[in-house]
Amino acid sequence: MNSKWYGEQMRIGVLGGGQLGRMMLQEAIDLNIHLHCMDSDANAPCSKIAHSFTCGSITDFETVYQFGKDKHLITVEIENVSVEALEQLEKEGVKVYPQPRVLRIIRDKGIQKEFYTNFKLPTAPYKLFENRKELVEYCTFPVVQKLRTGGYDGKGVQVLHSSSDLPSAFDAPCVLEEMIPFKKELSVIVARNESGDVKTFPIVECEFNPEANLVEFLFSPAEVSVAIEEKASILAVEIIEKLEMVGLLAVEFFLTKDDELLINEIAPRPHNSGHHTIECNITSQFAQHLRAILNLPLGSTEIVQAGAMINLLGEKDFEGNAIYQGLEEALKIPGVYPHIYGKEKTKPFRKMGHITITGDDLNQVKEKALRVKSLVRVIA
Image (cartoon, rainbow, N blue to C red; front, side):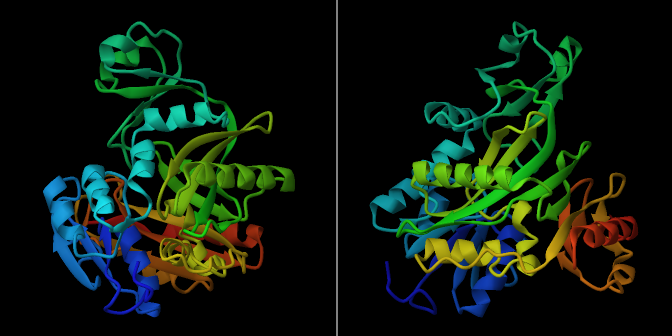
């Protein structure tokens, strides 16, 4: 790799031009790191602020190959990319982080689950099925059905409560997981650079919107024991080291009623459960991702203030040009930091932005977060 990691002499390609890429760009600008983004949407959030922007399919071999062949380094902000093109680019000397072999494991939830089993990592019991017809023979309910590939932002996941739900089951290769009675959903973000240095962010707690199956609230720090935090951090480090992955990895956990941790899913990129780090930690997840893929010293992940994060989702009954109702009122509250993603059109449950709320302690933060949640709506 080019020893100079900033400026014109270091061309870094990013597959995906959504909000994760946009927030990565905001960190890159401070260090004069040049990010060249590609997305199939000509109006993607990165399109106006990337060093250069290419409109093209990130799942098409030739398009990704042509985009990447003049780059020194390629990274991703979404897993659903042409891994085959990345493998070819890697063979030709382009650095690809996270590595294509890691993307192959993680983008297929079936292979991901088998990875946990092979390394004796704790996860919910599961079975793999090829189609809906096979599911009919599986009669233990309730279960969670997950499409093996292509799911994102809560899409491709559903609960089958009884046999009467089978007609609406996904008719595609899937993972069927035992439904775990859990008391908390937790997340740890871990980074590893090419030299093998590893750092974890403090554990956070997520509260989901059951209808959208998306994070509605995130709280940092999570209200868990030191022992649980340490165990989650150790597991996150174990996963990234067993993968020998370079980059940033989000590890989502279920905390069971018996205080056991089960790995739910992992994501090899900046993640929704790390957005609060921009205001709440010494180093943000986006800066840490750049440090990791460029083999720079990893930054301190220490918490500087308690925080909450609210996802701004498009309201259920609205579709069209986005209006952020109540945002000005929310801005009157100290410690409120909106991040609007630059998506002109809203639709039901689309991620349109997030708001981070900071304060002296978690109780104060939760109180303010509820106020902000009641004020701000994304309508059309």
